[in-house]
Image (cartoon, rainbow, N blue to C red; front, side, top):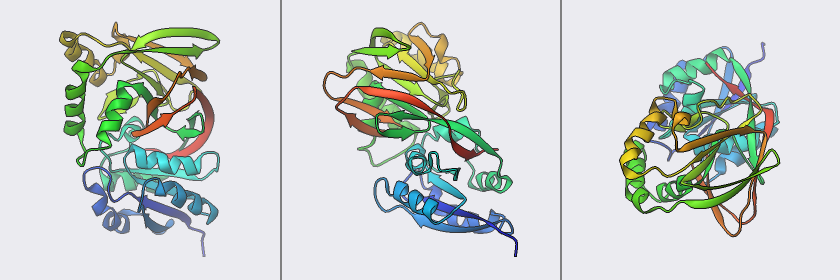
Length: 293
């Protein structure tokens, strides 16, 4: 009997806006079962996907497919980095930043067809202190919105945008001290992104020059535009040229430190995380295999 690749599907039943409910039926209908055999696990608590992924690696699965949003995907990434086991993605979240960056279809059927073809790309990941992520992290206003968004019971662009409108007028820029390539950079910023991928989510590009396999972190420092300038600045996110704004400064590096004089919150692929120490970002080159179109 010919060997079949073994795929573990990990489904977050709470992610996104309900797509995940249709996934089991779609897998049975569209997955090429002449090439693959599969198993489905559902997450039951926060970060359960990491434990399920690690168990899948130990059981000898060839591919782990994350069904969910960026947070669910990154939980799987944590268990896959440097293992040689491949990550597949069926987008079922709100922003779907990594999937959009990789041009993975948002349709369940089409995403499964991408898995059937099995084209793979080796990408970088980024480590911040002891946490690994695949797409993007941010501090400042970005982290505040991630914290507030985590408290809401609804998902999608509109609730996220409502939080931005609610908090932006009253948010005060903060001073940050960064070390990039041996140089100290002091800046007041609305937020700072540390990007591996271009996508911020919701089809917006915060780091247009970022590439997932270039061995570099794109550090994007965003100053707070005056209210009348916000619409003009925000539209650059959708037109893929955010870096042209006078309020944006970008750097590319393989390592960056953010000095922390107390407690600092960060948005790491949609998850709000609190740090007590300096933030040390470093690239882990070609450490993750992903199925792409």
